Length: 550
Image 1 (cartoon, rainbow, N blue to C red):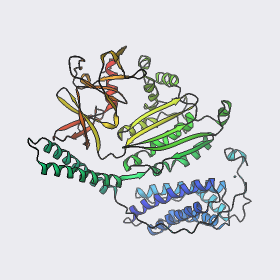
Image 2 (image 1 turned 180 degrees about the horizontal axis):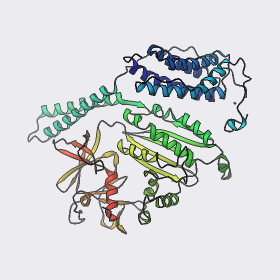
Image 3 (image 1 turned 60 degrees about the horizontal axis):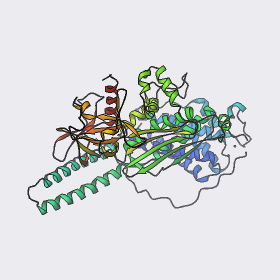
Image 4 (image 1 turned 180 degrees about the vertical axis):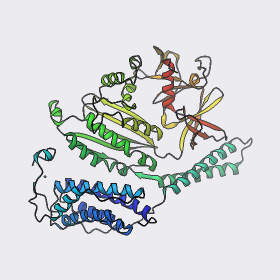
């Protein structure tokens, strides 16, 4: 095996497998789609060619047998049928496992002999009067997949000219870090020019030009890291296809916003969480066809996955029109499993009760199955969202469905923050976590048990988080001290003064405990180190103080 070309082959081979699976699923719905069949054949052929250069015989043999089946389908000697589609998808799964072995510098073993024999048998059939699967094996198939339609030849459109350059991600990360340092220097220059006793027109002009140039460089490098959400969504049709069959449910998958772009780090990190969300929707949210018909719903459920561009953020949504989440059931299960106490449950807001599904070890299933019930999965969604500086929300209506949304900044390289003064100390809070700023009014402050809340408007009451009490062990005194309110998704944060916003670069603070009140640190325009607050952990700390657990 040639170790020098292996890294390049792995990147290309994974791209080929992604294209192959996408084309196979498209072909399942459109058996006569010649473009999809041609794309599938090219992907497997390219995969096989690279494996030949590496001289990994088991990979070559497996891909060759699959290529032979696809060649007969492409030529029209065999028809595209459900049995052959299943065999192709399983064959691609084997190729994926072989790639994983190669990535670990291991020689892949031979593919499973039973599946290999099936692929060869399907290839060698001379006609399409093939044996159909047993009735129970096709119970989730269409009731009648009819003679397969002939495959249309692919169009003769001009091939797109390759106009891209593959760059090592580590090199790109190094450029992003350098741009981050440049942003900090820009901020310090602007602060220094602004603090000059006498205005210097030349220095002011240089500072403005520097600001524009750094912004241009920052935006250009940011775009280099942007990738379409299609790469994030492309594994979901296969997940929905296989899981809906396993559960005996009918599900129609809608994907919206595949062209919306987001930072590569987010795309890479969200693969597993997206799969968990889809599996959770199908297993817990979507009802069986007969149950849906009983409540006047169509037998086939709709699962909608969407990416929505929101200015400097991107929202990723997974929504179903299933049974919704029963808050009371979730709360009771949490009490039964010892996740929370009955006293704690009594003080939970509706959103906090729903967020119990993200607790490690929590599940509403009585018994674990191959799909869910072990209390893992949804906690991965929350921890990943938090690590990527995202925002997680749940919107559910019993009997109508559930929508889980994650909002992420377009880029993780530069973090816009709001600087806050807490008496003599300065802190920063990510702008992505902030909803609005507000003046505090004493008549809107209420105490419910040990918890202090604030009535933002006539219907919205949120927890009041006194940062003085948490960070300085000395509550801010309304009426005796200057105070302002910062409304976040986790509650109303009380501070001494809001100073202003600035683009910052997050520096890790590895010497602190893993669970702290801070996301990291940054260097302000004045050159001082400022800690960046974590809204979620601060809100949890406020709840712990109110319940006497802190």
